[in-house]
Length: 503
Picture 1 (cartoon, rainbow, N blue to C red):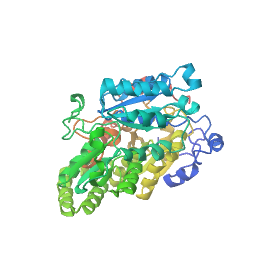
Picture 2: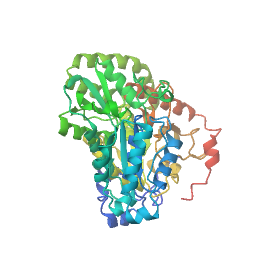
Picture 3: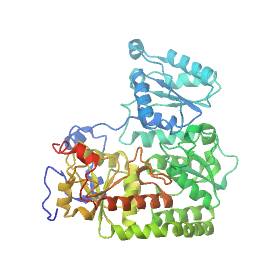
Picture 4: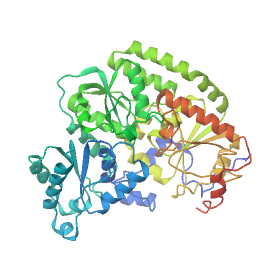
C-alpha cells in the first residue's frame, strides 16, 4: 500500500469533505421525498417508543405500561435482554394492554385503565410510565383522559409519553420526549450550589454511592462514563445529586435541587438541560463527553467557575494529569505521524476523534449514508461538537451495508501505509480481512459503543474524562503493537475473508 489513487466511485459517493460540510449536505429529515432521492432505501430512525422505553426502563422503581399490540413490548424485551440486561432496571416484564383486532379498530381506553390499576396493585412502583404504540395513535385513544382519571385511583405517579412510531420529526425523540422528563421534577425548596446533576447517561448504571441499586449492577470493575464524571465532580468537593438516566424516579424528582447540570452524551443530555434551565433556572456546562487532558481540563474549569470551586478544580487537574502523563506521552510517541480513522457519528466517535487530535494525530471521520443521515438525526450532538470547534475531515462511503467497507482500498486512496493508520471501530464497520486489513497489520482499536469494556477504565465508545483517556491510550498502544506482527491473521480476519467485499 504505497501509492495513492483517485477515489473509486464504488467506495465513496461524496469526495472528502469536513464535518460541517457533510452536515450541510443532509436535507431536513422531514423532507421525505428529498431524503429518499438522495439516500435510496434509507432505513427510518428508531421510533419514539423504542427510545423512550430504553430510558424509563433504567429506573429501578418504574414500570412501563405499553398501550399497543403485544409485538411492541416483545421486541423491546428481546432488545434489552440481549444487549443490556444489567444496565439498571431488571424488571424486563412489561405489562401491556395487548391491543387485539377489535381494539385496533375501535380503541382500547377501557383496557388501558384496567392495566394501569392492575400494575399499581400488583407492583406498587413509584412511577408508572404509559407509552403508546402506533395503533392507539391511529385510533386517537384519549390516553390523556384515561391517565388523568386513573391518577386519582393509584398510588404511583403516572407519566404519559405519546410514542407512536409514526409520530416523529427528524429529531423527534430528543426534541419532543427528553424535555418532558422535567415534568417529573419537583420545584426545589432550596437550590444547593454544591450539588451537580449528570444528564445524558444511557445504557449504563451509576454505581458510585448508590447502595439502593440492584446487586447485579453494583460493579466497580467496569466503570461507566457517568461514574468517571461523578468521580471528577466529587474530586472537586462537589456532590452528585441525580444521574439521568440511571437513578430511580424517587431521586430524579429532586433534580432541580442542584444548581448545575453536566452532560455526558449531548443528544441525550442537552434537551433536558435546556428544559431545566427554562423551567427551574438550572445552569449547565455546555461541554459534553470530555475525553482527553485538554478537553477534560476545560470541562473541570467550566464546572469550577459555575460552582465557585475554581481552586479545587485546578488542584484536581494537576492530580489527574500526574496520573495520566506517563501513559499519555508514551502514546503520543507511538502515534506520531499516524492518521486516526474513526467510524460512526455523533457523540462518542466525535469525542474519540477530538482526543486523537489532542494526541497530535490527523483525524478522518468515516461514515456511510446512514451515518450521514444520523448527523441530522442527532443534530443536537453534531451542532454541539461543531460549536466546540471540532470539524475534522469527513468521508461518506457509498455502501449502505455497514460491514461492506473496502478499508484497504480506502487506505490506498488516502495515501496511507498500513503503519500510518489507526482504525477506531465504534458502531461500524466491523471489517477485517486477513492479509489486507487486519488487526495484525493495521492498528485496530475496538471502541464499540454498545458493549465495549476495559477493566478498570470507562470505555463505552472510548470512555470519558481522565480515566477514559488513560484507558483508551493503553488500548491504542496495544493495537499499534499488535499491528507490527504482519502475520498470524486474527480469527475475524480469517472468518470474514472476501465475504463482505461484494458490497
